[in-house]
Amino acid sequence: MKIKYSFRVLLFVAGGSVALSSCSLFGGKGGKPTAQNPGQMSSATGLAYNDEDQGGFMVNPYEGQPDAPNMVFIEGGRAVMGSFEEDVMSYRDNIERTVSVASFYMDETEIANIHWLEYLHYLAKDSSQEAYQAALPDTTVWVGKLAFNDPYVDHYLRYPGFRYFPVVGVTWNQASKYAVWRTRAVNIKLAENAGEEYAESDGRIPLESGIVVPAYRLPTEAEWEYAAQALIGTQWLEEMQTHQRIYPWDGHAVRNPYGKQMGFMLANFKRGRGDYAGIAGRLNDGALITSYIYEFPPNDYGLYNMAGNVSEWVQDIYRPTTYQDFDDLNPIRRDGFLDPSAGYNSDSEKNPESFTSLVTDKARVFKGGSWKDVAYWMSPGTRRFLDQDSATATIGFRCAMIRAGSNY
Picture 1 (cartoon, helix red, strand yellow):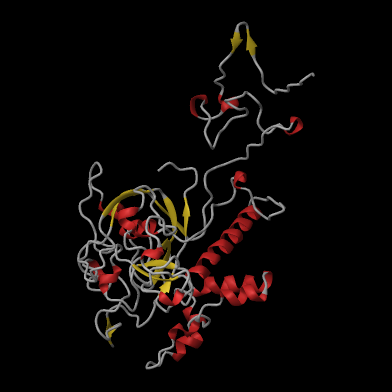
Picture 2 (tube, rainbow, N blue to C red):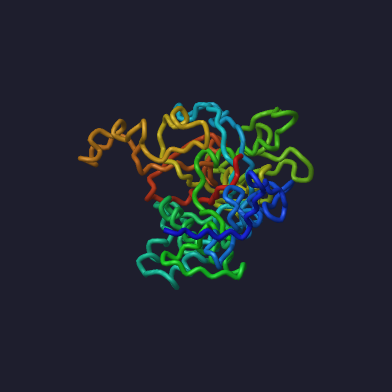
């Protein structure tokens, strides 16, 4: 049998092959190939790239991960998870643990009402009525039997004045589905901007194209806590940090100690029993409920409202022992591995009514404190949980995204 080989570039000298060092062939600095400049041929086989006539391997142009709307780069590194506050609830579910988190991207702000209304608009156009109905936030989360919150029930989501207030009344499941839709919407736009069309059977724009971004998703608990601490702002010399932080800003107080904003609150929270905003004429945080998503100063990563305003869903299911059990590199708890729900709920699968605890495989962590919480819950290391199918007027979310092709 005759085998035909076709090489665009194949050089020989007596006794062996010549090592090629030309930048034009192998690309990169000093002739070494890189992801951005792989050269014209494979450094492993010598076969030409992008030789369509000979069915060669196609290597698309690549200039790095494209910018994703509303995303801020979070440089990874080592950090200590856990609360630096007294464990006033005596849960002992956030005992300090040193971990390392890979670099990633996170939304600059919480997802706002206008973003969710945009989502509903496209679902109404492109999806089934069932999908649209399933995505509607629960506006009845504002209802109070002994409170007149009726205006928020009717107006908070759709009235134009609330456009850039964080969306609430969304479950963990709804937030996760939004992230899937957002990925598709953003990548289709990026492909259009690049003048590319993809018509694969599954509708996927291949990652190999180099023109799309990785999936939007909910951040892991470790990512969220790491980003909220923003200890990049406490660096001094040679891996030395001058201090830790109780909140996403410096100091032990919740008021700004500097400049013209001295004395103003740094987050939207409940100062004390019955005190949501202070007194007329000198409101302390300026908000009885949620507030504008850019209202307060960002932390040192440039993220707004990582404390207060609304608490935020993260990926992880809740277990009291998570900080003790999970890996110390890119930690996450996806399920009940090493800590099954049966240990909390006797015969829960056979008899759901026998639950003795709210700790189940549907219990998802939320972080950050809200407009209705006291300052204690604004510490990044504090943890709470709620069923993934539940929603409240105090929980919203923001998305995260991996930094693809990075080793730090």
